[in-house]
Length: 384
Image (cartoon, one colour):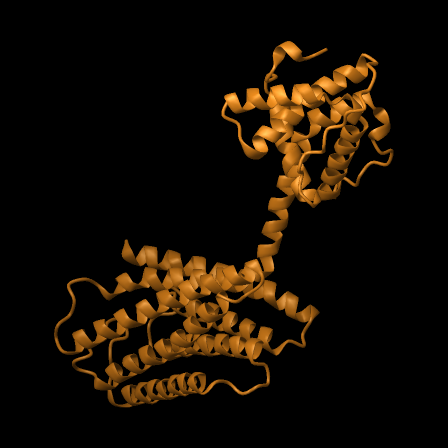
């Protein structure tokens, strides 16, 4: 059961990795002069290959598959480091601390390769189940790999966390936070892997299989794939959310707009807005409603406004909801007076505080539309 779950995780990671890698490659072919993005793409490719090589049903455990997979893993981490460094520092010198981390990673990687070569020559370990007490070169190889991975993940985690706090773009910040979580899970994996290996080497094997750490690193890898691709698809998610929001607000303002255009058809602009531009259609509808309101200024009853405000407060309405409810009462009464050809008054009511931009105006009109759909606050005074 555990092996089936592990294989399932691997297949999901390979599919996700291929999708992100192909997506990024198409983007790079369109605009190839970006060294940092090529570094990231190389990291994604090596990460996907590392997971694919680890699928036992296709690639049985052997010395060759072991070293290839682990070199791919360390190579992808190094590529992600260079993606960060080229993005942040460009051609400038890296901080000394970062250089030391990278040097440690490269030295531990070299130690892993040398230990692997010695184990192949002098030892014949079972790559399905390492016996660390009997094979010192294998122990050195695994510990060197774990240390190299930890050095790289620590660098990536610190860089992700540092820049997530100052990133000015929402989806870039979310991407960096996701990568911080991903590399943090990787660090948890390396600490556990190293401790498990050392305990096994001294004859104190923990009372559970080492494979329990696989879901941790699997979730970390999936989080890394999501985080690395987030700046690309994240804005599209925002655009879709805004599109849904604009269309919902457009429908919510429909009753108000119909009431005003039925009484004053001239406020409706002749040309229809493009069907694809929901934002423009919404803002145009809001402007038409406010234009209708301005044409009814002489019909707005100050006494009704005071009575409606008192009735609204009695119902527990406050702030913007109270103002919107009063406006709904005024507009009902004004439209009825306009339809009855009543004489406009010279006493004008100030316009409500609808904000200093179209988005704030739309939000206020949504509140008015909601109040419009409810029963009047003062039924006895409306309609005229």
